[in-house]
Structure formats: structure tokens, C-alpha cells
Image (cartoon, rainbow, N blue to C red):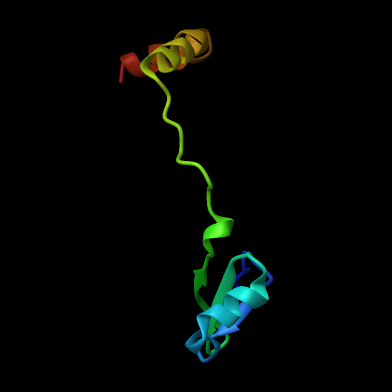
Length: 82
């Protein structure tokens, strides 16, 4: 049996009225069940990220690469010969 990622579930029949399903879930994701199998999830907007993901700047990437150089150098040396 697969593990569900939420304890809120609904059937395909209950999805005829999706607002009721969302209200009953209280802002949490809902597993959609069909014939006792999970076929998908209904995720309300409140359960998703509120802000847009932030992307690293080139300076942040270069700083990280310089700081991790000592840690990854043995792997780079090994791969150089391959």
C-alpha cells in the first residue's frame, strides 16, 4: 500500500463540489481517491509557496564554489583522468 502525503482524502464523487472539499480540508492538501487508489492531490493556494522562489546571484554562486573547492577537489582530480 502506498503512503499518502496527507491525511485529508476525498473521492471522485466528492470532487463534484470542490469548494466543499477545500473547506473541509482547512487549507491542507487533499488526496483524491478512485477505487481505493490515490490518483492525485488537490492543493489549495494557501498550501503553496507565498513568495516567488529567489534565485542566487552570480556572486553568491561564485562565493559558494570558492568555499567548496577544497572539499570537492579530490573528486575533480579523480574525474580528470576519466
